[in-house]
Length: 162
Image (tube, rainbow, N blue to C red; front, top):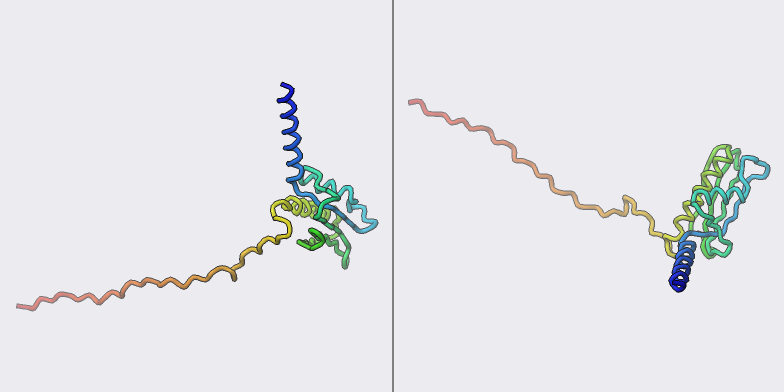
């Protein structure tokens, strides 16, 4: 009985460890305009991302790094995310918004969560194939249009008068 219990505990720990490593994880850095009280600090931003994912995705040992920022440019707030893997940029996103830092932060947190959630879908060091465009689609030759022959004029049968 004791062996069965030990085996069960070992199996459960192995499954839990696998689950943790199967999830996306990244190093994270975040900056925002100083003095804007509507902008969350880094701790709050991490919490927003974790809430979207349902777990804490941040791991300082990860080869993936996400740099998120909110900055004021020409009177508008701009959100920016840069995702790197082993130092090479593998993705970036810019969010243009009005003057509400809380809204930009929410959109940024969701975008970061989606980026992290998809990390384990693409193998490392491989860029996903770009989506096919209309220009990439093969062009089929036009199919012949079947036309019905034009009706011939009706020939009336005339009987010769007798």
